[in-house]
Structures are given as structure tokens and as C-alpha cells.
Length: 433
Image (tube, rainbow, N blue to C red; front, top):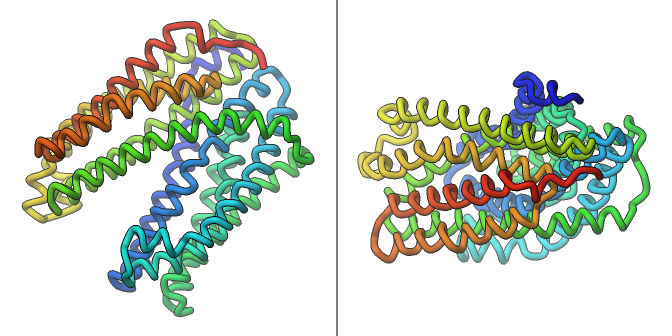
């Protein structure tokens, strides 16, 4: 790929838009699943919420199978070694199967204790454990899908992953209400549909490896290198989880209205993060390819080009959600107490979008360059030095949601400083494979 093509907005959109579809597919399916189970009553819905949270936390710590694989595959692809780039996906898939089986085993052992830890000795805890034990059967397939997304992004193919994930989720969305209601399986039917979706998508990713002729035997050397990168990304992801769980805990200690308001604004924040993350995924693939081809100056130009696009998108999103401030919160709740809590968090959320545009894009640049150790260290420093202290200080001084969202804003500001400084340097611009 030439530098001119790489800098084209159309080339970036060709990667980013299908990637956005993949990112959005799972949250949309969760919404459908929630709507189906919600009509069973409060206890099954609580079971789905608790079980789904546990499964999400377990698997979200293993996204290195996606992001790390993209970085390694993209370099090989840029160097003209597509067969080896796909081979990285094969090794990541073997690793995904092994780790997935371990997650399945441990999850089956600890499903009930974890559910009781979250919800005590209650009907909701029992329902969560039942759902989780079935849903965990899909853990190896979830991780195979992560690995498949990783290598396909690396070879700049984001359309097939979108089709595969969409196929699994659409089938499951159709089957879920049938299993839950006419077949009378209730909450367990939801879990079975979830597992079905994961294995359909995983089978399609495995078929793609077969079609590309890359179903090789395990190579421990490659998998060990992937695990080294995985360690950095797991620690980085863990810092996010600790921060966001702390924010929810502090909101819960304020009032029920604060929790509701935080949930509304936070879920919108997550949604816009997915939009911005699609450009970050394009950055990973393009930067890795440029560096793999040893086009270092081109990689630097692409980095700032994608950052400008992402910043512009962040400004646009800020404008849209500023205009929607009088309307959108009322679509989620009519409770006056909750609505009264929203404005301080809302305007900080709006102000964050341009900052997030810069952070997400340059995160993608550095991930594509394989600069995971720097991202690990700076993210941990920003979490421990900015976000967490401000969150707990807001609780100590009774600052409410404003304090929590000031903490999140400072987390983004400090991360922005870190990634901008790194990208302005040449430390990340390491050409070759």
C-alpha cells in the first residue's frame, strides 16, 4: 500500500466502518437479550446482568488476543509476508483455545461463589450462576473470535469479521426468544443462544484460516512472544476495570439517583468510545503495515492524519450531544431525582469527546507499533495518579457525580499528554518485522 493510499480518508473508512460494526454488534445483541429476558421478571433479569458482567470482565482481560495479534500481523503484512501474517492468527487461535479452556474450567468451579460474592445468598445469585455455567461453555469460541478479529485487522480485512460476528449474533437474536419462551427454557435459553452465537462466529473464523491455508501446528516461540505483549495489555485493561468499578462504587455510595444518572451517561460514553475506537483499529492496521514495510516517515504522517480525523469526529460528537442535552436524558428516565443529577456529568462527558478522539487514535497508533510497554506504564500511572485518587476524594468530600466525572476527565487529559508526547518522539517508530 502506498503512502498516498494510506493517507486517503476512504482507505481509513474502509477499515474503520466494518470495525465499528464488529464493536457495536455485541452491545446491540446484549440489548436484545436483555429485552427478551426482562419479560421473565426481576430475578432472571438480575441473573443475566450479574452473569453477563462476570463473563464480560473475564473475557475483556484477554483482548490482547485481538489487539496484540493485529500489531504483529500488520507488520508482517506490510513487509509483504501475508502468509506469515495469517500464521500469527493461527498461533493466536491455538492460544485462544488453550486459554479459553482454562477460563471455562475455572469459571465452572467458581461461578456460584462469584455470584454469591456479588449478590449474597439470593435468588439473583442462583440465577446468575445457572446462566454463567452455560454461557462459559462459549469461552473458547469468544477468544477464537478475538484472535480472528486480530489477524484479519492486521491484513487489513475488516469486512469479513463484521460478516462473521453479525451472522452469529443475528442467528442468536432469532433463536433466543424461541428458546426462552415457546421452548420454555427461560434464562437458560438465553445462555444457550449466547453460546450458539459464539460458536457460529468462531467456526467462520476457523474456516477463514483453512481457506487461507494457515492451519499450522502450534509454535510455542510465537505464542510466548504473544503472551509477553499480552501481559502488558492485560495490566493496562485491568487498570481500566479497577477505575470504572471504583467510579460505580462511589456513585452507589452517593444515592440511588446518582447511580442511575451515572449509568445513563456512562453507557453513552461507552457507545461513543466504540465509535472512536473504530478509527483506532484502522490506525493499528495501517501503522503496523507502514512500519513492517520500513516506511517510518509515512507511519508518522499516517499517525497524525488519523489523529486529526479522530479529533474532528470527537468535536462533532461533542456538538451533537451538547445539542441533545435537553432531550436525550429524558429518553432514558423520567425520574426527577435522576434527571437532576445528570447535568454535571453530562457536560464533562461532552467536553471529553475531542480529548478522547486524540487519546483513542494515538492509542491505536502505539498499539499498531507494538509499543505496549509504554502504554501499560502510562495508563497505570494515569489511573493511579489521576483517576482513582479523584474518584475516592470525590466520595470523601461528597462531590457526587461531578467529582467522579472530573476524575475521568483528568484520566483522559493525562493519557492524552502521554500519547501525544510519545507520538511526537521517534521512540515508537521502529521499522521492520
